[in-house]
Figure (cartoon, helix red, strand yellow):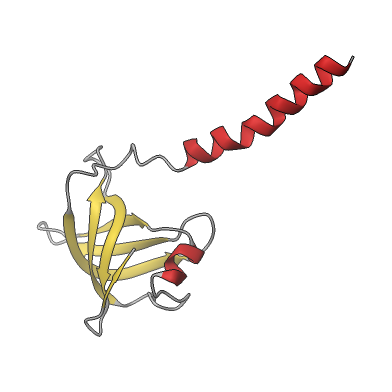
Amino acid sequence: MRIPFIACLIVLVGLPGGAVLAHHSFAAFDMQREVSIKGTIGEVQYTNPHVWFFVDVPAANGKTESWAVEAGGPNILLRAGWKANTVKVGDKVEVTIHPMHDTSKRGGSLISIRLPDGKIIRG
């Protein structure tokens, strides 16, 4: 009876580690490429586990494309100099990202952002 209990305990303790490693995969992003986009912040989601913001970028056809940008968690960004109001809807920004591998999707993982005042913050 003691062996099944210990086996279950080992399995339960080992599960969260796998979930954490799976969560932090950057497989969706092309980490070998960098893309810069300029536009206006359309939405900000300053929440755990990752901060997301959306940049409305003028396209060549005259329409606007919304780019989804994934940043680190709020605690990580705080240590990099961010605050909850660092990026606000309506801000004109320039963002450098590692783009998605799937080029049909407009988005990427944040490298840095140039704020309206010219300050550059890494993500």
